[in-house]
Length: 154
View 1: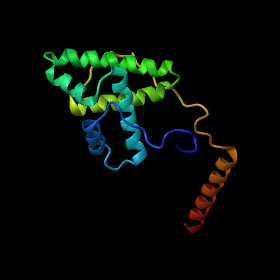
View 2 (view 1 turned 135 degrees about the horizontal axis):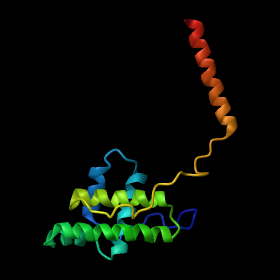
View 3 (view 1 turned 60 degrees about the horizontal axis):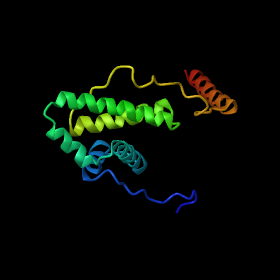
View 4 (view 1 turned 60 degrees about the vertical axis):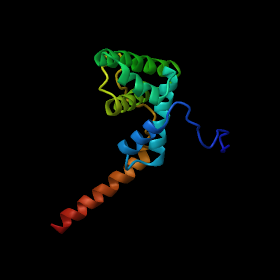
């Protein structure tokens, strides 16, 4: 356990080699934290579906009508987003998670078809990126002094 009381590593129950290889290929220069987040999103999505990544890809391969499969998974992605929003996650977070799921499907199966405007619009972040006034003044004064020196040299 770490300081917050959570286990140090999360045991993935719904992802395997397919997802791990996809993360390696899709995020070659990403930090380990970003890779972990992508794996966690995919594990959460497959957990929501009640399947594993290999069963998911195999289901696509077995599907006779790929277009219909794409639409049905698109509806499930929307349901996944709505479920996450009802759990208290922000719309922006859910949109990012949907993008990760769609990228996985694009690279391993096919492009998903999602109904338009079923996932909420991105919202402006409030209070998440605090930039204090004193820091702003300090930066603006630094910029002004650089500009002044530049014009003095001219």
